[in-house]
Image 1 (cartoon, rainbow, N blue to C red):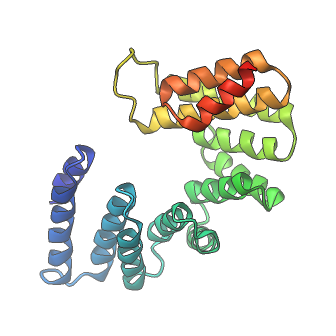
Image 2 (cartoon, one colour):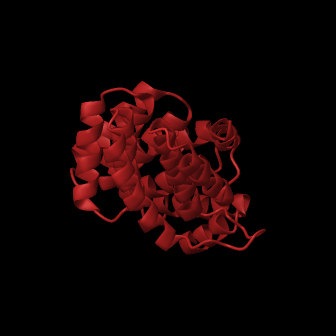
Length: 238
């Protein structure tokens, strides 16, 4: 059932994906009486609902997961990400910190918390420390390299930011080669690269390199058309 749920999830057959996980959850509660397995099924439901942007239901299932297993670091991490998307920032920070305290090698949690701080322009020294912890564990992860570039940008270190963002771009480009016009761009790799290129454009703009900023924004838009990037490109054209 769980394998089928993920197949439905990847194909965006949402109702079918949820139904299969709910079947697994019922089995975990009744046939096996396994709280740890039930916690994982609740976590999976929370992850699916988070992806579908149904944040109240995502929170509900993730809190249930944690109630069954308070040391479920993945559930706490996912709850932190859902809180962040719902703009409940203090709650997000708390859950991400708890995830790290449970699993001190949780690179994704270090990165998410560091990027959250950097994007908000708060606790920038702590943001730098968090992102370094992520990169130590996964030194070739393009998203983490991007986070390092972004926190340096927020700290006003534009040359340092540029160096890290160029590295991030190289890694992300290798993972997401350019597609022909009209191709489906809805992949995590394309979204990551679009963000990296937008950040590159921001750094070039801060350095007064308007032509290179415009080109970075143009390439970002090819990976995903976002109104904010289009406005930045128009500004660079003036």
